Image (tube, rainbow, N blue to C red; front, side):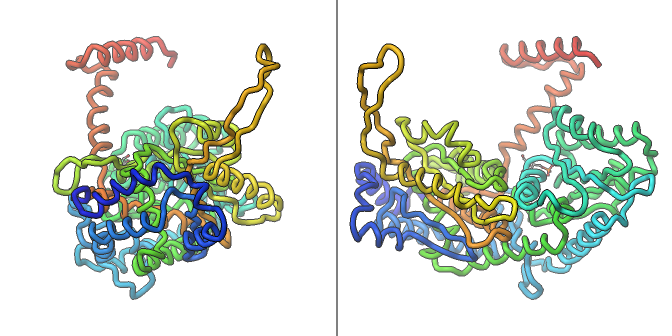
Length: 542
Ligand code: F6P
């Protein structure tokens, strides 16, 4: 149990002394210079600047000692060796094998996986080429112009984020659309603008039983049939990404048009698998391959770099430090570049579904807080929304900024406009600002009041890179790995999600009741809400 390790106890006492120090004191004079150099790490083109965190050299030494005592490197090695690190489901967590090079030799529970992975990649390459080149046609012989990815959670957030980051406005090939919400408005609005004859649907679901995805897939199928397609035509308009061949066939999709993946790929780690099919279609298979290579570079770094220089290790330790020792309950992620707009949503699932747990591997209750709430939006937008709270509220929240890292032909001002504001925020968050005077409006006009610009206790981590293209995938991989570090330190299984599975099960009886099945015993509040929903449903126009 990590919380009973000697280093955990020492860190607890150490945290009490850190709370009293103001970060401003660490940046004065030559020691400040040394600090910023010492607390910057680089790998695979990513730079992690973590100097403005509430840590000292001693904190770091203790955190690395905690990692050693908790055997983080051993757990990482077991994951890379394809051992059943997902203990509750007795599965490997081997998403690294998806971007392996020939000879990397990954095995899941002892079984080589390279041939299976290569076969699916070849299938994806053929399909992406056919769709992008116009060889794959719809029911009236025209090329596909729009592709709709229907999926939710990991079958949506990863590909949606990467497409948002990398698809250019001038991209050749079809336009990509993502539908996740079971609220029919989402799908209806998107389909309303499309031509069924030139639209293709990717139904993306590991289990092929997820309620939201299957409901949307059935609605889409009806839409094709109402817009000129016959049942036989549907084969040209539906493909599936799944591990469940029987359910795919039962839905009516030819298994030849199914892109498989495996139980050792968790949903939230799956964008590098066939779940990335929509990415390959959107940006072409060669660039999808670069995505795999970028993630592989980070895999190798995570697997081999010493802990003190290991980016995911450092990030994971910092998160545990804040959550478990300084008791921060949330953290803000603010990408200062528009293409990374969806990164916070992607991280929400990644971190909160992985580590939002309170039971340890041995079944005992965890005696510490795990998984902070992740929130945020693009940085400058956030500055005009929630940054007031970041600067001046009583509670403080660590925040990570990701400044824009490229200059594009269409947006040459990106760096000059985003960096100053990101850097200024980080400086103010960390060191604070002197008190200033201001004139209040209205009745207080003549009264001077003193306000604090910023209390200066908010830790800021900055993550940026030297090039744009590989950034997203290395970054995504980087945070993914830091998740595993956190899971090990909390001694929990970051690869299962029984809470969500339970939620899915609990929703089913209510769904049946709304469909007219006899009422089940519920608490009074739930029963009243179900009655209200039934009435609303009866009154809604068809
Ligand atoms: O939300 C729970 C979850 O199982 C996620 O882990 C997964 O990404 C999502 O649902 C979608 O599941 P599926 O791909 O099986 O439809």
